[in-house]
Image (cartoon, rainbow, N blue to C red; front, side):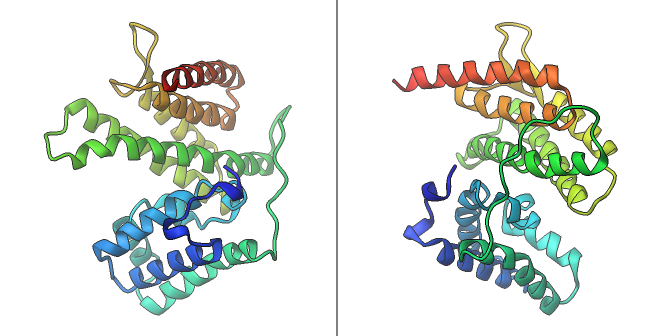
Amino acid sequence: MTAHSTSWPDNMTDVGAVTRLETVLLEACEGNREVDLGRQYKALRYPLIRRDDLRDIVPEFVRAQRDLSAFWTFIREHDPTWKARRQFVRESFRPLFDRIEGRSKPPAASTGWTGRRSATQQARIVQSLAPAALEGVDELLEIHERALHNGGPVEPAQQEAIDRLKELHSAIGELIQAAENNLTLDDRLKKVRDLKKRTFVWAKEGYQLTVASLPLTSSSTFIAAGVMFLVNAMVKDLAAAATIGAVASSAHVVAANKRQ
């Protein structure tokens, strides 16, 4: 997604939307988690984390915390005082304001990598690819959690799929944070890889991709295949990444044909 394709609520400008999101989080720092604020947070967070030109400077807690309840848990553990919490949010948003107000530019697009990776190269790869993988898992969660709001009982397969996706979402978020803090990544990469394998499974019949045991639609398959490709690339499973890339292309064609 490019900078020009963002659809902010109420036709907000970039500055207006980021300012409003910061305000919502500043209020949440004091424990304010009103339903309307929660709705605003989700409506502003969703397009923000999909902006290619802002992806590298979106605060990690915005990427990782999908609603205000999760943010409240995070920020309460980060610091016990509301003043320090608010200062932390303001400092975290400063790079965003610098970017949308023209004082900084997005980094150049990453290219392919060859040979043995150093720790620094691995961290850069994670910082480049993991946010997109996190967004894909986030989008799959949005799709599967819609069933929870229909009022009917949740099927066991649906709940299992949601639980697996949440585990993977949390692990990728931890991986990003570790890369940003220059921590060792090997164990965290292994955890993400193993959770990916548990979350996305090829059905024995029909060669269909599932989340846990729940079959995916064509559009969801495209998203899931993208997540798998990114995870494989991060852990340097290039053969698997190539296979998943082919599957993603096929799923995209199927989805496009169904829309016609």
